[in-house]
Length: 229
Ligand code: SF4
Image (cartoon, rainbow, N blue to C red; front, side):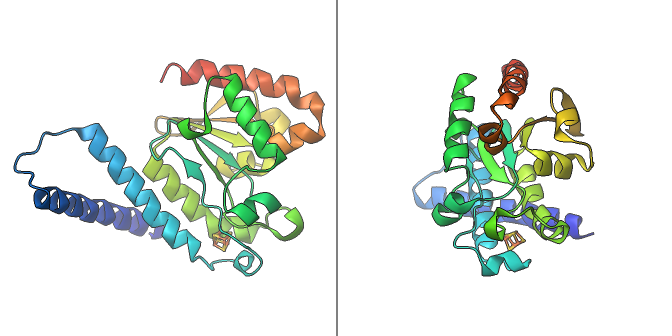
Protein backbone atom coordinates (compact mmCIF):
# COMPACT_ATOMS: atom_id res chain seq x y z
CA UNK A 1 0.00 0.00 0.00
CA UNK A 2 2.81 2.34 1.06
CA UNK A 3 4.74 1.45 -2.11
CA UNK A 4 1.70 2.19 -4.34
CA UNK A 5 1.31 5.54 -2.60
CA UNK A 6 4.95 6.38 -3.29
CA UNK A 7 4.67 5.37 -6.97
CA UNK A 8 1.57 7.56 -7.28
CA UNK A 9 3.41 10.44 -5.62
CA UNK A 10 6.35 10.03 -8.02
CA UNK A 11 3.93 9.89 -10.98
CA UNK A 12 2.20 13.07 -9.82
CA UNK A 13 5.60 14.67 -9.42
CA UNK A 14 6.55 13.74 -13.00
CA UNK A 15 3.25 15.20 -14.28
CA UNK A 16 3.75 18.39 -12.35
CA UNK A 17 7.34 18.72 -13.62
CA UNK A 18 6.11 18.13 -17.19
CA UNK A 19 3.58 20.95 -16.80
CA UNK A 20 6.25 23.22 -15.30
CA UNK A 21 8.63 22.39 -18.16
CA UNK A 22 6.01 23.14 -20.83
CA UNK A 23 5.05 26.42 -19.11
CA UNK A 24 8.70 27.52 -18.99
CA UNK A 25 9.19 26.63 -22.64
CA UNK A 26 6.04 28.59 -23.61
CA UNK A 27 7.32 31.61 -21.66
CA UNK A 28 10.57 31.34 -23.61
CA UNK A 29 8.55 31.70 -26.82
CA UNK A 30 8.08 28.07 -27.78
CA UNK A 31 5.03 27.66 -30.03
CA UNK A 32 5.66 24.20 -31.39
CA UNK A 33 6.98 21.09 -29.72
CA UNK A 34 9.63 19.05 -31.44
CA UNK A 35 9.28 15.85 -29.46
CA UNK A 36 12.54 14.43 -28.14
CA UNK A 37 11.29 11.76 -25.76
CA UNK A 38 14.69 10.69 -24.47
CA UNK A 39 15.92 14.22 -23.68
CA UNK A 40 12.63 15.04 -21.92
CA UNK A 41 12.63 11.82 -19.93
CA UNK A 42 16.27 12.38 -18.86
CA UNK A 43 15.42 15.88 -17.70
CA UNK A 44 12.44 14.59 -15.72
CA UNK A 45 14.56 11.84 -14.15
CA UNK A 46 17.10 14.46 -13.06
CA UNK A 47 14.46 16.73 -11.56
CA UNK A 48 12.60 13.90 -9.79
CA UNK A 49 15.87 12.63 -8.34
CA UNK A 50 16.74 16.12 -7.09
CA UNK A 51 13.33 16.37 -5.41
CA UNK A 52 13.97 13.03 -3.69
CA UNK A 53 17.43 14.21 -2.62
CA UNK A 54 15.90 17.21 -0.86
CA UNK A 55 13.41 14.94 0.89
CA UNK A 56 16.15 12.55 2.09
CA UNK A 57 18.31 15.44 3.29
CA UNK A 58 15.66 16.21 5.91
CA UNK A 59 15.05 12.57 6.90
CA UNK A 60 14.74 11.57 10.55
CA UNK A 61 13.18 8.15 10.04
CA UNK A 62 15.85 6.33 12.04
CA UNK A 63 18.21 7.44 14.84
CA UNK A 64 21.19 7.81 12.48
CA UNK A 65 20.13 11.39 11.67
CA UNK A 66 21.35 12.45 15.12
CA UNK A 67 25.01 11.55 14.52
CA UNK A 68 25.34 12.37 10.82
CA UNK A 69 27.16 15.40 9.45
CA UNK A 70 25.65 14.96 6.01
CA UNK A 71 23.17 12.72 4.27
CA UNK A 72 24.91 10.82 1.48
CA UNK A 73 22.19 10.55 -1.14
CA UNK A 74 24.39 9.19 -3.92
CA UNK A 75 25.62 10.76 -7.14
CA UNK A 76 26.08 10.12 -10.82
CA UNK A 77 23.97 9.90 -13.94
CA UNK A 78 20.19 10.13 -13.26
CA UNK A 79 19.59 7.78 -16.18
CA UNK A 80 22.50 5.40 -15.63
CA UNK A 81 22.23 1.89 -17.00
CA UNK A 82 24.40 0.72 -14.12
CA UNK A 83 23.91 1.57 -10.46
CA UNK A 84 26.47 0.67 -7.81
CA UNK A 85 25.19 0.06 -4.31
CA UNK A 86 27.37 -0.15 -1.20
CA UNK A 87 26.55 -0.53 2.46
CA UNK A 88 26.59 2.89 4.11
CA UNK A 89 28.65 6.09 4.19
CA UNK A 90 31.95 6.04 6.09
CA UNK A 91 33.73 8.91 7.82
CA UNK A 92 34.93 10.74 4.70
CA UNK A 93 31.61 10.28 2.94
CA UNK A 94 29.73 11.63 5.98
CA UNK A 95 32.02 14.68 6.11
CA UNK A 96 31.74 15.43 2.40
CA UNK A 97 28.18 14.25 1.74
CA UNK A 98 29.40 12.21 -1.23
CA UNK A 99 29.58 8.45 -1.75
CA UNK A 100 32.85 6.53 -1.97
CA UNK A 101 35.32 9.38 -1.55
CA UNK A 102 37.85 7.76 0.84
CA UNK A 103 40.49 5.16 0.02
CA UNK A 104 37.82 2.60 -0.92
CA UNK A 105 36.23 5.22 -3.20
CA UNK A 106 39.53 5.87 -4.96
CA UNK A 107 39.91 2.15 -5.51
CA UNK A 108 36.34 2.01 -6.86
CA UNK A 109 37.15 4.79 -9.35
CA UNK A 110 40.13 2.71 -10.56
CA UNK A 111 38.04 -0.45 -10.79
CA UNK A 112 35.49 1.40 -12.93
CA UNK A 113 38.25 2.81 -15.12
CA UNK A 114 39.60 -0.71 -15.64
CA UNK A 115 36.38 -1.55 -17.49
CA UNK A 116 36.24 1.75 -19.37
CA UNK A 117 33.74 3.58 -17.14
CA UNK A 118 33.87 6.91 -15.36
CA UNK A 119 31.98 7.69 -12.16
CA UNK A 120 29.71 10.06 -14.11
CA UNK A 121 28.62 7.18 -16.37
CA UNK A 122 27.01 5.31 -13.48
CA UNK A 123 25.08 6.14 -10.32
CA UNK A 124 26.77 5.36 -6.99
CA UNK A 125 24.83 5.03 -3.76
CA UNK A 126 24.36 3.01 -0.60
CA UNK A 127 21.73 1.01 1.24
CA UNK A 128 21.87 3.54 4.12
CA UNK A 129 22.09 7.26 3.46
CA UNK A 130 23.56 8.17 6.88
CA UNK A 131 26.74 6.92 8.54
CA UNK A 132 26.36 4.39 11.36
CA UNK A 133 28.53 5.58 14.30
CA UNK A 134 32.07 4.15 14.25
CA UNK A 135 31.20 2.44 10.97
CA UNK A 136 29.33 -0.33 12.79
CA UNK A 137 27.15 -2.68 10.76
CA UNK A 138 23.72 -1.34 9.76
CA UNK A 139 20.90 -2.53 12.03
CA UNK A 140 17.88 -4.28 10.46
CA UNK A 141 15.55 -1.46 11.60
CA UNK A 142 17.82 1.14 9.94
CA UNK A 143 17.85 -0.82 6.69
CA UNK A 144 14.05 -1.12 6.87
CA UNK A 145 13.63 2.62 7.52
CA UNK A 146 15.96 3.64 4.68
CA UNK A 147 15.04 1.02 2.07
CA UNK A 148 12.25 3.10 0.53
CA UNK A 149 14.73 5.75 -0.64
CA UNK A 150 16.91 3.30 -2.55
CA UNK A 151 13.77 1.70 -3.95
CA UNK A 152 12.61 5.06 -5.28
CA UNK A 153 16.08 5.84 -6.67
CA UNK A 154 15.94 2.57 -8.59
CA UNK A 155 12.47 3.38 -9.92
CA UNK A 156 13.56 6.84 -11.09
CA UNK A 157 16.96 5.92 -12.57
CA UNK A 158 15.71 2.61 -14.05
CA UNK A 159 19.12 0.89 -14.31
CA UNK A 160 19.52 -2.33 -16.24
CA UNK A 161 22.27 -3.64 -13.99
CA UNK A 162 22.83 -3.27 -10.24
CA UNK A 163 26.30 -3.94 -8.86
CA UNK A 164 25.90 -4.79 -5.18
CA UNK A 165 29.18 -4.19 -3.39
CA UNK A 166 29.71 -6.18 -0.22
CA UNK A 167 27.72 -8.47 1.99
CA UNK A 168 25.08 -6.01 3.27
CA UNK A 169 24.23 -4.61 -0.14
CA UNK A 170 24.04 -8.04 -1.77
CA UNK A 171 22.06 -9.66 1.05
CA UNK A 172 19.65 -6.73 1.37
CA UNK A 173 18.98 -6.40 -2.34
CA UNK A 174 18.65 -10.14 -2.92
CA UNK A 175 16.77 -10.70 0.36
CA UNK A 176 19.02 -13.56 1.39
CA UNK A 177 21.44 -14.56 4.16
CA UNK A 178 23.80 -16.23 1.71
CA UNK A 179 27.47 -15.29 1.97
CA UNK A 180 28.93 -12.83 -0.54
CA UNK A 181 31.47 -15.44 -1.61
CA UNK A 182 28.59 -17.58 -2.90
CA UNK A 183 26.54 -14.71 -4.34
CA UNK A 184 29.28 -13.15 -6.45
CA UNK A 185 30.44 -14.33 -9.85
CA UNK A 186 27.04 -14.53 -11.58
CA UNK A 187 24.06 -12.38 -12.45
CA UNK A 188 20.88 -12.73 -10.40
CA UNK A 189 17.42 -11.67 -11.56
CA UNK A 190 16.35 -8.61 -9.56
CA UNK A 191 13.26 -7.16 -11.24
CA UNK A 192 11.77 -7.16 -14.74
CA UNK A 193 14.61 -6.23 -17.09
CA UNK A 194 17.05 -5.66 -14.21
CA UNK A 195 19.84 -8.01 -13.16
CA UNK A 196 22.14 -7.86 -10.16
CA UNK A 197 25.79 -8.77 -9.90
CA UNK A 198 27.37 -9.00 -6.45
CA UNK A 199 31.04 -8.51 -5.70
CA UNK A 200 33.30 -7.72 -2.75
CA UNK A 201 33.18 -4.20 -1.31
CA UNK A 202 36.26 -2.11 -2.27
CA UNK A 203 37.02 -1.64 1.46
CA UNK A 204 37.16 -5.45 1.85
CA UNK A 205 39.45 -5.58 -1.16
CA UNK A 206 41.80 -3.09 0.55
CA UNK A 207 41.87 -5.29 3.65
CA UNK A 208 42.17 -8.56 1.72
CA UNK A 209 44.16 -8.25 -1.51
CA UNK A 210 43.35 -11.93 -2.02
CA UNK A 211 39.89 -10.87 -3.27
CA UNK A 212 41.48 -9.06 -6.21
CA UNK A 213 41.19 -11.95 -8.63
CA UNK A 214 37.50 -12.54 -7.81
CA UNK A 215 36.68 -8.84 -8.23
CA UNK A 216 38.50 -8.73 -11.55
CA UNK A 217 36.51 -11.78 -12.74
CA UNK A 218 33.29 -10.00 -11.68
CA UNK A 219 34.32 -6.82 -13.51
CA UNK A 220 35.02 -8.71 -16.72
CA UNK A 221 31.55 -10.23 -16.48
CA UNK A 222 30.04 -6.81 -15.78
CA UNK A 223 31.85 -5.22 -18.75
CA UNK A 224 30.66 -7.98 -21.10
CA UNK A 225 27.00 -7.54 -20.11
CA UNK A 226 27.17 -3.72 -19.88
CA UNK A 227 28.48 -3.49 -23.43
CA UNK A 228 25.41 -5.36 -24.67
CA UNK A 229 23.01 -2.72 -23.26
S1 SF4 B 1 19.77 6.34 7.43
FE1 SF4 B 1 18.06 6.63 6.02
S2 SF4 B 1 16.22 6.36 7.26
FE2 SF4 B 1 17.92 6.74 8.68
S3 SF4 B 1 17.90 8.97 9.01
FE3 SF4 B 1 19.33 8.57 7.33
S4 SF4 B 1 18.12 8.80 5.46
FE4 SF4 B 1 16.66 8.57 7.17
